[in-house]
Structures are given as C-alpha cells and as structure tokens.
Amino acid sequence: MKKIISILLFLFVSVFAFGCKEKEKTYLLTPEGIPLVAIGGVVSEFEVTTTPGPQVLQSELVQDNYDVIVAPVTLGAQLSIKGSINYKIAGLITFDNMYIVSKKSVTLNSINDLNGKTIYAYGQNQPSDIMLKYALEKSGVTCTIEYADSVATVVSSYFLPGNADYALVAEPYLSKIKQKVEVNVIDVASVLRNLSEGNVEFIPQAAIYVYKELSKSQIKKILKVIEDNIAALNKDNFAYAKLLLEQDSNLYPLFTNLGEDVLSGVCLNAGINYLKAYDNKAKLEEFFGIVDKANKNLFNGQVPSEDFYFKY
Image (cartoon, rainbow, N blue to C red; front, top):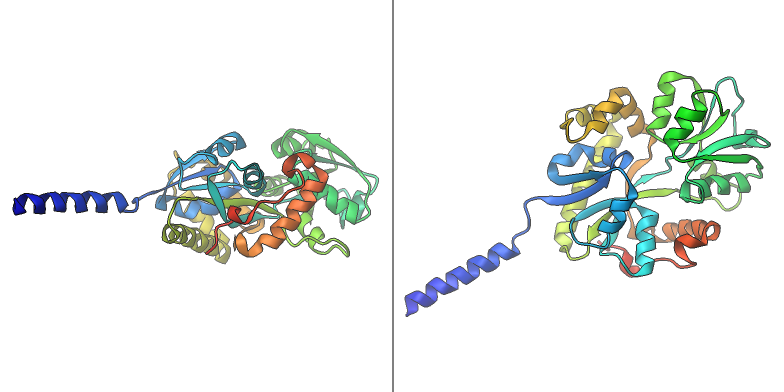
C-alpha cells in the first residue's frame, strides 16, 4: 500500500511540475513593417506570426492566443477604455516615424514653407494626421491637406510621379524615396519637440503588449530580449540590417524585399527605441489628450486606467 501511495504521489508531483513549467517558446504576433524590423533580430527567440493589417491585432488583443502582441499604442488604449483587452502595455518600441518631404526643386527649409501650399497625407483623422495638423496649427501654418488611402499611395501615385510637391511619409518609404530622388526632409517629431507652446516630446506608435496572466518573471525575460535587441539596432544600424537579411526569407520576405540599404536607413530613421510604458504614463496621457481632442471617436474623453500598464 505504501508503495502504491508513493507511486501516486510521484505521478501527482510530476504532472503538477509539468503543468507549471514555463513554455519553451513565446508566441508573438506582430504587424509587418517597422514593428517587425524592431524585433527582427530576435525572431528566432519567439514563435512569430505576422499580420499585414490592424483587424487581426484588434481581435487578438481581446483573446488569449499569444503571449506578446505588438500593436499600436492607440489601439490598446481604445480597447482598455472599453474594458475589452486581455493584455497590458509594457514597452513602447516605435516613435516619431513621420516626415514631410519635397523634391530638391521645391523649397522646404521649415514647416513654415507649407503656408498656402498643398500637402498629400494619409490616415485621415488618425494619429499621424492629427499630429501633422497639430504641428501645423501650433506653428501658425495654414495649408491644404489632400488624403490618400495609405502612405504607399501617397508615394507611388502622388509624390514620385510629380503630382504632389509636398508629402507626409514614413519609413520604410522615406528610405525608398531617397534611393530614387533627392529630397528635402522635415522631421515632424522634431517640429513638435521644439514648439514654443504646447510642445510634444514624442509620438508613440507601436507598443509591446503582454498577456495579463503571464508571470512577472516571464514578462521581464521577454522584455529583456526585446530591449537588448533594440539596443543592438541603435548601436550599429548597418550590422543590424545585415542580421535581418540572415533571417528566413520565406517567413520574413519584408527584409529581403527592402534590401540592406533601405533596411539600414529604416533602422536609423524609423524611431525604433525601447521605453517602459508605465514610466512614461504621463507623456502617453498627454498624447492621448491631443488625439482625443481632435477625434472624439477614439477615446471618448477618457484615458486608460492604471490596470492598462504593466509595472516592473
């Protein structure tokens, strides 16, 4: 009888230990584009799924299929305010990826040169458009904004063919444009930081969201991998671009399609960095306030609660 009890106890402990064992792989969902570049150096550390658009991100943030989801800051905030999110925001990884460009034949020394002009932009009433309008308004500039359905259309249908003198673009399109024509460039984030009134320190774009049921030790381990990877990117953008091209081209065709020159430019100009979200809560709420004032449909005059943030 004692022998049987010992065997049963051993089996119980073994099953319990197996159930408590942390998963060998971390399941991560990320949009293609700049967020994928930001984590691209460590994709082998995760079980990565990519998606081209925001619809999948929105549906997955209310489920529990992934340990980590990379998604827009504003999307997570919206879902949190509605009370329908299963993830906490932990790290901010992309910022400030907004540039005004003109060809060299057109004057663009400062944002004031847009006064009375027409600029082609994208994402009407979304954060990129809102922050462009904010920069123009606070700079005392009045101009006409025409919209295309995407930054790709702005570049391919308007700017490069010569149908637009001025355009709002983002990486990787800025680096693609520079391969084809010489351009004047204004960094919108720099304009916002240097406003004499109502300056904005950064434009938060993509964030790391962690599943709320993960242990703190699991989350810290995941975040350390991502943070170290971004530090390596910023230390040597050329070496990081080469590292991306060593990844499986079938799984990550984006890297091969962009090529080493564009990738290195993206790493330099796309505003990839790592900041703890909770430590920057006040700055995020300032940003949410600007966005909400311009588009009440986004946040309905609210900000996410404390529970939205992962605290180290």
